[in-house]
Amino acid sequence: MNANETLRDAYILRGILTERVANNSASKIKREYKKILDDLIKQIKSYDEINIKSMNKLIKELRDRIKPNLTLATDLQELALSEASFVQSTINASATIEILKKLPKDSTLLRIANAPIYQGSTVLEAFSLENEKLKQRVASQIRLAVMNGESIPEINKRLQTAIGATYNEAEKIARTATSGLVNRVRDEVYKENEDIFKGYQWVATLDGSTRVEHFIRDGLQWDLNHNPIGHDLKWEEVPFGYNCRCIIIPILKSYKELGLNTKEITGLTRSSLDGSVPQKQTATKWFETKGSEFQEKFLGKGRYELFKDGKITLRDLIDKNGEILTIKELEKL
Image 1: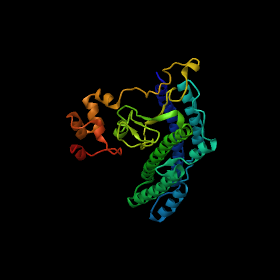
Image 2 (image 1 turned 180 degrees about the horizontal axis):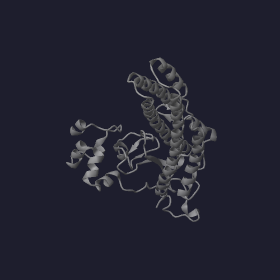
Image 3 (image 1 turned 90 degrees about the vertical axis):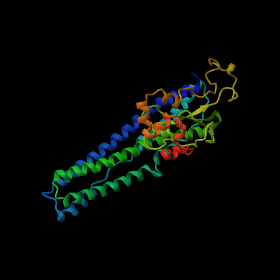
Image 4 (image 1 turned 120 degrees about the horizontal axis):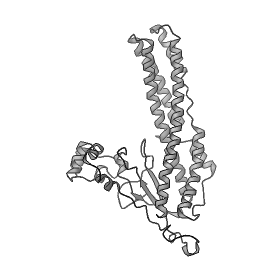
């Protein structure tokens, strides 16, 4: 196994640990919204009945109680510092020589952790927006319940649904922000050490849960300026959409490309850092080993029929910008 293959495997294992951090954040969010739900139900139970006269008073009381603490600041700060150290130690271990020597300043890493991005907003802004949406949902559900003459238990069920929807969105924010943070930290480390890399490679999880536009990118490479190598798909940062399970790994230069004489490095073999990209089963070959039932479920009936009849390839499913083509567009190819 060469250095780049070792590096790929280490990054995949690291992804499992990162997922645990995301799960921990999701658990904190769930507990916070559970506390809010319990508090709202307790407040509702203090009313003998809820009618049009008392409705507005109750809505105001409930809105004032929606104040979840969802910063996640400490977890993200620890993750940022840990990730930078991981990249350095893993690359050096894979190369069996200290080639990555520079790390971003802690202040840079903490800046990234304190301002994680979700769809163009900071995580705090995104959480605040979801809380405002929750207040609106609660008000709407109370009004609907009163107008329908519903009982207090029925109102409680409406609140559970409203908070459940907000929890799901908040969890998406936390998970996407965690993944985004990891990759922004890695990018900073790469920028500090670009002289040891010669490009980047996309690695996707090959299973039925992977989105088509992610799946097709598996194994593709880009140079340091993000120009495609041997294909026409434009560069995309990861996470590439919510619940993206893809990673981008740097491609290490060989000893020769680094200007090193391996004979002078005790205990190393010439093949340990040869500059070769990880050799693995391509997404297309993997897909072709699956049965027709899996293929149809993955692609959908219309796309599967075109694929089965040899009218399109997997690569044809998306354009060069990574957008999925409609069946009508595919039929014109």
